[in-house]
Amino acid sequence: MAENLRIIVERNPSESRLNELNIKCWPKWGCSPGRYQLKFDAEETCYLLKGKVKAYPKGSSEFVEFGAGDLVTIPKGLSCTWDVSVAVDKYYKFESTSSPPPPPPPSSSSSSSSSFSSSS
Image (cartoon, rainbow, N blue to C red; front, side, top):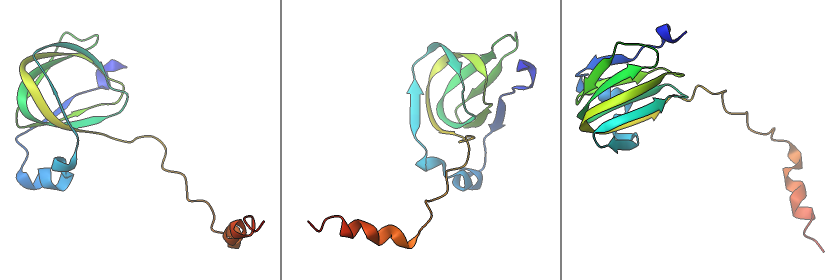
């Protein structure tokens, strides 16, 4: 199953593409050089401001390399080791692939009934 979980790297996306994604509003995250075991429970899109990473998907001998200026999409369900050679600073966003938000409660005319309860 892990074979179809691929990390997608978009090298040097255009400024308009970054603006379209509204990247500057995303939260930021950073880490120092080292090896990190990561599991992605949701799809993550991140844009590296700085850093250099080799990501080794679990159960694979191959790695995906990305760094500063790359827009990276990591699939939901992927476990991998990040070998960080240059400290990372990135913007990131998790796709909310969970169910859509529940609909608002029905607006019935009984909403005014609460005002009667405080008449004691």
